[in-house]
Image (tube, rainbow, N blue to C red; front, side, top):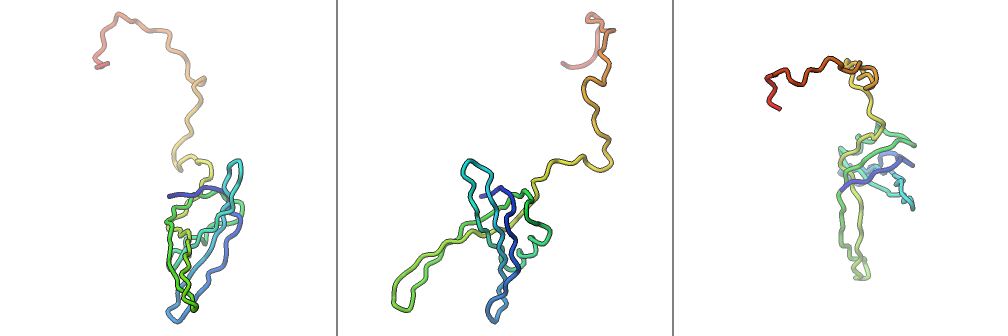
Length: 125
């Protein structure tokens, strides 16, 4: 699954427990009639993927939905969901590929006026 929108917030990397579990959160605001502020968490080595992204940038995040069950000390079972990101990419406008000259507009080409429809050619179409 994927989420697209503008970055509203990028959190700092947090470390938990003795084994050094790492988590970092990003909030993306969707661009639709009723914008949603979606928090996505990146964990462990994926936290570094957020280093090059900042507020206002348009992004597409590939996500997995995660769910877990937890029993509290009183014996009540609770359920929690999370949205976990595993890839993020910028959605900025396509830039011309380096080294490739820009294609001129169609009106820059002169029309062909010396066509002879009766002349045979070897093109297969």
